[in-house]
Length: 481
Image 1 (cartoon, rainbow, N blue to C red):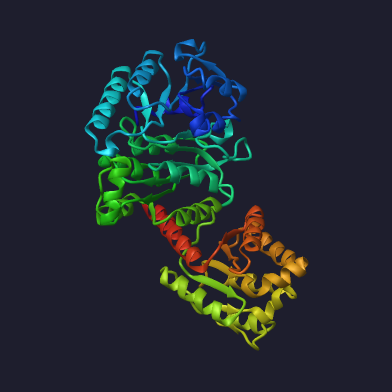
Image 2 (image 1 turned 90 degrees about the vertical axis):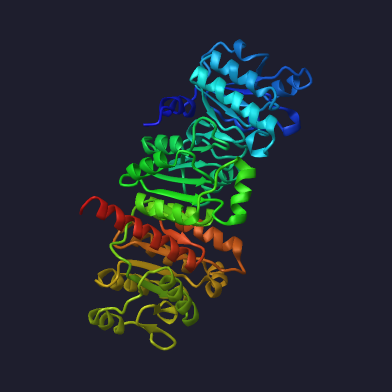
């Protein structure tokens, strides 16, 4: 158990937050980020030139942390690095729940003075049993309470959800929180932890593993200091909650970059990959992949194998779809004789093929025969060689027609929604017209709101489906089933 679990709970569920040193030059970043915070918010600023603007934001400014009458659950420190130790000492003396240091310029710079100040902060924190988040980070976020670590993040119950995120990069953490609603992913809790001089990745993983609101854990890490403890915590978590990890700095040049970013130590790629495999975690290579995999996990429709039934609207895309799935390690098997018999009763073979993939453009007729989509899905559902189903809607050709006749698209999406709700076999949909990116995104948003698992490309769909299928297979075997 991480020693910081109770302190993190207090900070994430903060009733009182203080922001020390926020200034107009930075656009009052933190005070604006916390404009929807549901608890009490204080500014601590001694510069008389800043105070009128702070009060104009509707925030009460005080001259010291001592002037705040309530117990302080979370302090955001945005002061010059030379001042930071004094603020941390005040936080320790006042028994603050946690202090987050936005302040940078410490060990990540390689500067002896920065290293000395970081060590001093760590010593003060240890003497007082104080949780430090960071330094050189963006800190905590809890959308349900309006506790944000950047302006513009969604807040309230509608923004909350079952995905917890921990990130060593402030930018990756912020953009993940901002992107989550677009991806149909709700955030339970999130943290950017930077240099991690007190609490490290393992502490945040441990907290999210025990957080009832978190069902899937995603993270971006650059280096892990307590490697054995991280591995053991990861291995204890994955049988109950899936963990998706994006590792930065696996290349030689990337390893140099991470040290100057967060002073993290490099981990050889083979060691990292082997550790994930043994622990049952899912490794991804990008933010796109992290969200793709997370959405599959949140859909909670594990496939029972790797046999894919594919539907495309024309020949070329059906070939590309097949190649993408096979390259990802999925199978595209022939169907049963019974399936082919059923398909022959209605499938339009002129300009199409029903072997698998099903080249079904003529059969569905760009939406004019939407009922046939349901029939195709039923065939794939009953075929024992098929474990998961993917439909490429062929938007490159169809989108202009669907924009002109929206009832065609509505009929198809109704069928896809119904199939997804029945949870027969895992269904995913590829919807992208490169020449109509805005319209494509709107259609994907509509499908996601309806509960349909949707991707922007065949390779992304195939990769996410294979990674998650491997995870569920591992979990099934780990449970001895």
